[in-house]
Length: 114
Length: 111
Image (tube, rainbow over all chains, first blue to last red; front, side, top):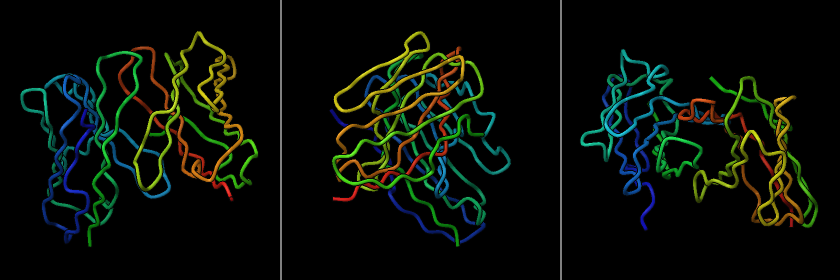
């Protein structure tokens, strides 16, 4: 069974440019997370979806970040415009149901803003 | 925001020794999970312990949970060089959903 797939793996952009990340969760997983991980830190939640509904986006910087999960399957996370401080690894994860279950993570997208 | 703090921040041991990592958290939880992250394979789930459990084992892993002290520990016995990675605890609240990670412990196991 395929795991969580993210693309691209690496992205280098100039500040003020837009960037988008894509995530395809494990088939049948209703819950999807986007996390941001800064160097030497643990992942921090940006947004959580239950099917196509964003149920927790309190930590998403809404002035420049947006996300969508069409049809409750794959998801995109966009930054526009990017700032130097957005350099980080962006992780997508999914889990099979709401409740006490493990999350499965993709390999992440390493973003460098120059 | 990070839920927990992990201790130590870094741990260096020899192959065959045991490694113990600790995690403290602040709010009531439904369960606590441990994940491992290395550069090659991303974040991988290791073990989950529910709030009504005190100890759990999985292979060379032993996890304890003390909800009165809001703390957990992860013990890796007979460590191997392949255990070299960062280890994170993550808590899931009483309403489930959000998985909140700690800062992590960097474990280095020398052959």
